[in-house]
Length: 397
Image 1 (spheres, rainbow, N blue to C red):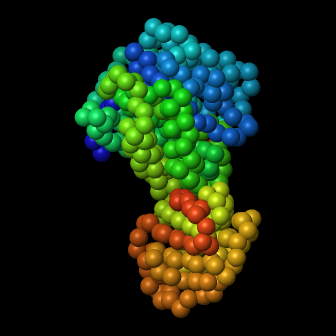
Image 2: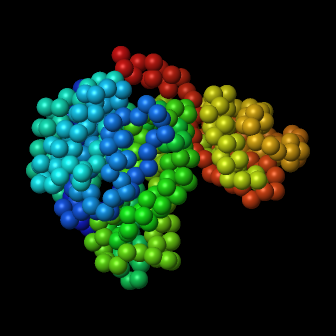
Image 3: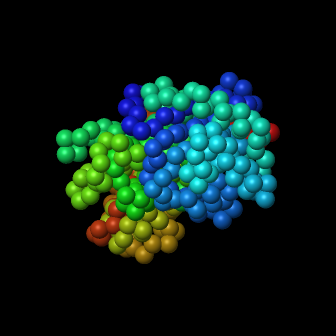
């Protein structure tokens, strides 16, 4: 994919030996020499890594200069040393580019409970600073530097015209397992050259994440390090976006984040299907979200899709125990646009056709109508395969 990198940023990814494969990038540095407005959304896991606390304390901000990310080591559940190492990482990155630690954001991802190899981190930061660039290759290298079990980098971008001025948005993320809403082991960074206020950036990011990264699940496991950052250099134009211009920009950011978010369950460890769950007709969006998440986290639903079994009873059962008040007589369900259940009762359908539609396509659609309310949500998950169990049983050992 060709990504147009926003103005005002340089970046790279380097291999500094954190990962066992010494040829894989494992440290990413993003530099905004004139400073960027920054916003962040973070995991709700109480056992969060110190890098999450660091970033929460430093966003929203009007002047972030550096984002440094290491992969292969989460630096989570590492006590005081983990806190000290995070602060040292910020100091090293700040000194490398001539700024102060309060202008640095940190992200880490990988194995929990292992101390950071700080000498390797220091070497990696120094190495990265000598390879910074604003081109697509540098962006993709940075996107690879944040990966752990991902099969490949995950990137998305848009260029939109606002008041005759091109605005660029470029995003990267990582995640394939330990994925559950609030957020999902995932890291994400969205870069733009749009001019934003810190308050608008924070509000916008929260709203966009709720409809993208908070609507994905692989196994429902909310990680310790989940972070999404939005950085805006403001280099495209001087006056901060407002009104309809800001609304148009937010819509484009949401497109980028949805595209990135879908790539995570699509790359779920051992996954053979990306499952899109649409729930409509609930009293509130939260009700629709609760039903969709319950379906997404059902091992029986996920294994059924893995086996191309159009066993709609598992889905309807999950609706019933989601804890949402509804009228069973108003529930309808379609699989890949094939009606299988309507008004509280089964519909005659060609089971072989439905099975083939699941087996022959990587994407499967679950469409639920549960009433006449205005609540609606779109949620994404992956199926559950033997390969997922095998991978995660051997991940650390």
